[in-house]
Image (cartoon, rainbow, N blue to C red):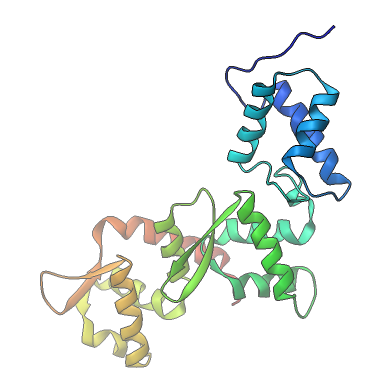
Length: 240
């Protein structure tokens, strides 16, 4: 006769947690949506564990976004889908990315001219549900970041993918500071476009006005981060 198992603390490596997860994966592998009632009843039939212990394990797996009620996936198998994995890898590689960038990249990777927006939204929602990625707003855009990436760095990565933003930042890194009104002439872009970028770079704390003057400069403590992001972009900037 099996003794009842009481779990004082829970880790993903605990044998009982792994057992519950295996049963959950068995349920989802049959293309069944996971319900907590089904999982609870199935676990209780297969091995002896206290009611409170089992509730604690299930709650732990939900809190960690390893299981999501109503889904036909678990965190451990959600990346088995080829397209979904490519979406995730793209977001990890490039930090803050917009929906249209992901769609273009996925179309190339799958050798398809187009990729259904509905399908891509579904992939992104699953990655969000299981805690692989997060989304934030930058100006009028919604961008996606890997869950572990700092939001500020994600925003900086997103902004520096823009060609005009990169020109402005490269100029300021080289010149230290320059009059706001002169920048558009040097970067050779339309004044209104440059002014829009400058305002955004100020709002998101990449650059600032210098000593209450009309000159702008890169914020000192952001320089190394910006240089690293630019270096990575130079090495692997994807076709927009």
